[in-house]
Length: 124
Image (cartoon, rainbow, N blue to C red; front, side, top):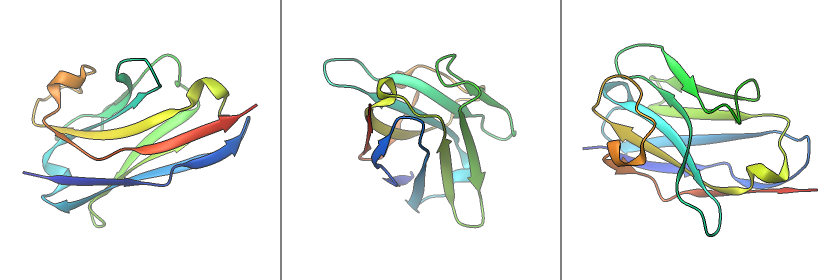
């Protein structure tokens, strides 16, 4: 089992940057594949990025490729999502999830553990 806590959200202007953190208060992040998802009002949970379990492989949604980078600090038991060149379309609640499935799944249903989410708002 792993318990995840996101932080780092906030209000930023178009073109700005934010770093989201997802810390494990229980469990060890290195044992899991970690994914980032987001959910805007009235929409489903959307895949953003994932780091595969047991490897350093990463996958990104086309909408964030080249702008967002996910990373993992095993010593701090924390994963990060660095977001740059933000636009209002990036406004959403961002969630991190943990999965034991190998291969970096992009479906929210493949993730068993979730954090509480952190709000990111990008103003125009």
